[in-house]
Amino acid sequence: MEIFTQVLGYLAAICIPLAFLPQTIKLIKTRKTSGLSFFSYSVYQLGGLTFLIFGILRNDIPMITCQSIPAFLNFIIIIIIISNIIRKQKPQIKEVTNA
Image 1 (cartoon, rainbow, N blue to C red):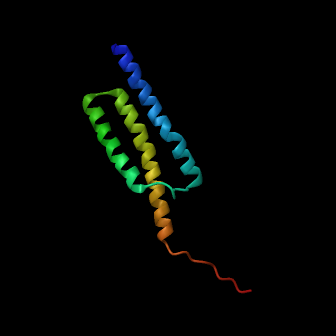
Image 2 (cartoon, rainbow, N blue to C red):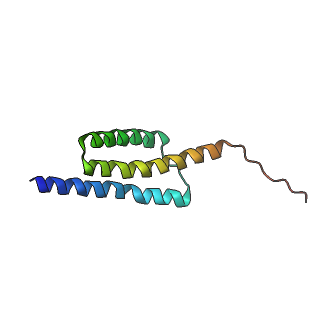
């Protein structure tokens, strides 16, 4: 039963980070974050970091793996969302041409 539990832990440690990868790659390529919630990703980041600390304190390798990779990818997503928010708030300077 212990081996089965370990296999489940490592399977989760692989699958959960892989779920974040396509979204992160798409956001890096397109920089389109209009449908994403900054608040939601921030709360997820807080929860993920809390679980990461919990895994470190328990010395639980699957949990550490499962939380550290998505935390990193989620951090990238949050940075892209913030940069898009800042970009939208800057006044757009249009070039005036004399015709």
